Image 1 (cartoon, helix red, strand yellow):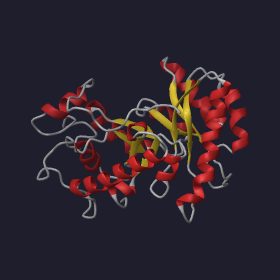
Image 2: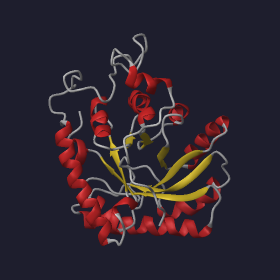
Image 3: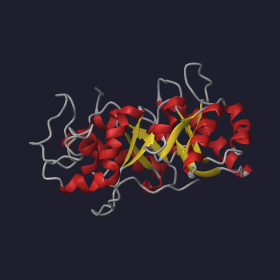
Image 4: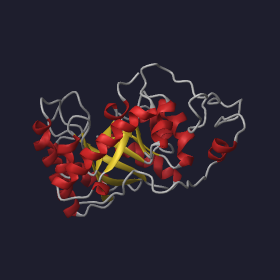
Length: 291
């Protein structure tokens, strides 16, 4: 099973690499960007509550998010223990799509550093605001071909590569930068017609072709199982995807560097961890209903 470090922060020091990040902490106006910047209205992530105005009255407070996070951490630890693993073996990805930028700031203050977004345009100001303070962003949604060029510099990992056409597009544009793009292959274990991803019998042929793409590093698999009445109903799907990842790993495909098995969301993440997931994606379980 691949290893991934925990997403929780260790220590309080951050590394600042971008001018925007320096502005983040030292601007007297408490703004991340200069007044004439298109994102000038965004405030720094650690502004006190009397400065940040929330966008909706039903957005959870930092204290409420902290309660949810504590419960999730306990559940993750128990699930990992049942699988003979440690809590640190599983990364928690906080899904912040359609959440205001202040919510990302609250999550940062609580120690979270790994975030997932579904829309390139929505994610851009969040990425610019928090990456310099230690945040890491992953792309989770259906990535359109015309959005790939803009997405590549924003996201550390693209979770949802489910076609050879998209893989080739990503590889070509990443190749222009001289740096391979890190991606996960999305698997559709139930062959749902309404969902993106490769069916189980398409995965190995895909890997044969994707191994020829120098602009990719394939770091593992991702799946979203079908809606189910109980988490246990999704266990066979998680088992199948985990076996597929192991099979790919045995075949030693080029461009494959097994690190992540991204499985599990609000209703089934404990079962996913028991079946080998080391990256779980939680949004409403942490932050409540989206806007």
